[in-house]
Image (cartoon, one colour):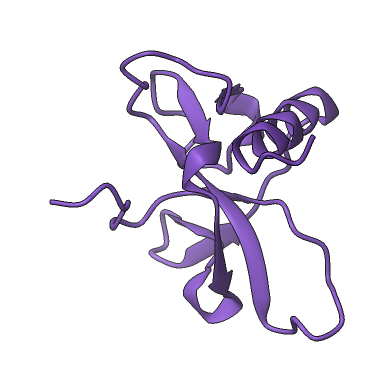
Length: 114
């Protein structure tokens, strides 16, 4: 089995809208599996930064910046929470400024942009 993450998981969108890149987003996957040895490219993400359905789960969440990728927006969907009446309610969340800065620093390190 390769190192690529293949299951459905939350991501943090880190790209801006750029001309010529319509329909694409650069993302960092979030995992509840802690790294064997936390490194500069692993960022602890507060549970409060996760959408409903993901924020209530116990345990830490890790942005794994060494797994950054660019994907089609068609591959992304908002988190869906099933309500009592059976309907899905879609939601998103935003990371705080401090966490976003840590993610950007980790990306700069892993991509050797300094």
